Image (cartoon, rainbow, N blue to C red; front, side, top):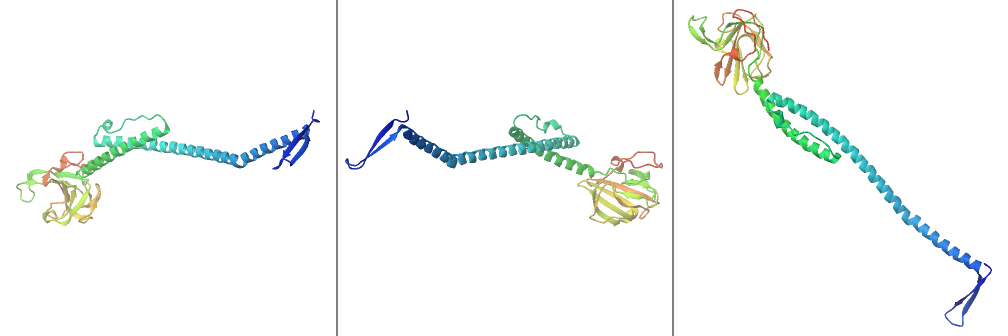
Length: 293
């Protein structure tokens, strides 16, 4: 079969020139096989040299994109967890402040409920967090205003002792005539500590005529308190005071018949009854009473 031969004529430019080749079927088969093999090898080389690197780069790119997407999902989940934790904290704080401020918390808190994709949950959480931050900011302002107002009300009994003379009309111990008493007199042992009845700022500290050594404290825009007949005072004008701070000691300076604290409360420029403001256990005059702040 392969011994059969073929004659191949190859003509040149001139008709008289030609080349005669005689090849067997086996040789022709071998030549064709070599050509086909060469073509296939060339195609493979081209694929390996040009196409394969491109596909490898594409695979690496896709792998990198996948890794980046996984990282973004992890970051999103972590961020969402942080947002959720912050939401819970804000809600608790908001509810607490709302109760203190006397506000219906359901009217200011956004409705709860999260469910869906991580992206949707994050968007919802951020919106809810913004609403909570706004509500919390308003409540904190109200709370601070309420706290500032409450802390400016003279509510702390200023010393430990006995009420021996109350606010109102009484017999003046010096003139023996009826006179208006602008505060209360608390009999106490010498050098008993005198406490500030509320937060405030000292506006006077020194000798004030018949009041002897005295301290006057301004509490916010409405209230003032006076502490008179002190043996000593430990504060100065302009000093900020917190409720319960020791501002002086009980004495008998000025127009006084004995050791006691004369205590006055002034509300919007008018003298008022201190017993309507301070927290204490009332007992009959002449008996010992204890501060119950």
